[in-house]
Length: 151
Length: 258
Image (cartoon, rainbow over all chains, first blue to last red; front, top):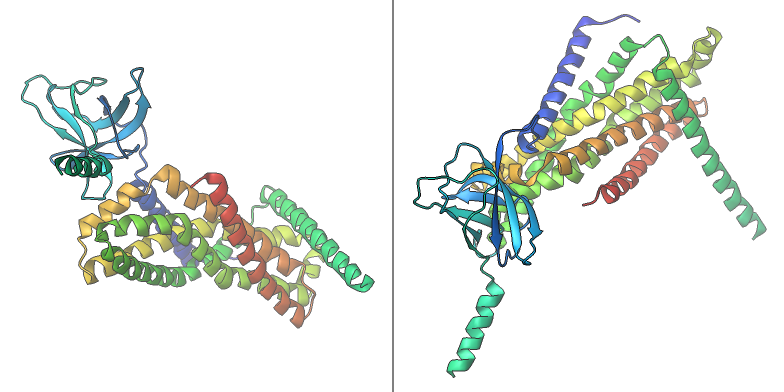
């Protein structure tokens, strides 16, 4: 069993490159995080969330600042959406959360529109102003109905 | 009629027998993993043969698969004005299915067949019997390092394949077709999750590597000791391992949940 130094070196390189590719896939592409990165959890209650799903992005001014972590029905049968937001952002307490659609048929996301107050939302707090998802079905339905009435 | 039923029974029996022998062989390989000496030098040589020598093939195929995906999906998606979905579609299809399966089939043809042919010719030239004469267990000495090397090499090659394919799709989608690079990468990163997708990809490639290592060494070890027997065993490795990879791919996908 002779060992061959240059061959062993190449094998070592292969393993390193393979592990590097694996790490790139896991950490960068797959978004694997070790340890608990600091996140602020905020909640918002909507009458209708449309097609919003977990992991949908939360954006301020179009920039992603977090994602939807859970959707639940509260006792009033309204949808409570919890979202994980990056720390260090001062979202004023009169900010509003709206469910928007990327493009006409794209995925739904939560757009946060900033308010004017000096105080900012803390971990676990709830958006006081929300705007439900705009349903194209409903819009078309209303349009057809209105057209029928006016005729 | 009776003869036909009899031959059906005989082939069914021999299939079950083969499965049983394969299982026993797998058990012996597993047991010899922990038995001293470790045969680390042989493992390194086998890893060189199975892993390092496959890198060029895997990189080239990965890049080409990525380029084809980029071209096909970009043209189809752009008909719906959904070019920005390219990263997500490329990433998910590669990480979940194409990477492990195509890489598994390529390694089967490139390295698995070579392992069978090597062990088979050792058997045909009575080298395995020679080892037994010296009280060396050929499973521990010959089969175990190669099976382990295929198992270790597969996830690494799979990761390389996927990274090269992502780059290939980038070259076509971004540099050639004019999609924005940031849109491609951010679509990719937001669609692919570690827990759902990369983990599944890793599990698949690990299982495929184990299956291939087991099948390739078993077929070589159990081939009939002549030139035609080695040829049959090599063909049988490629066929059996490919079918096993495709079948287990479906099973893992179904169990994991889509």
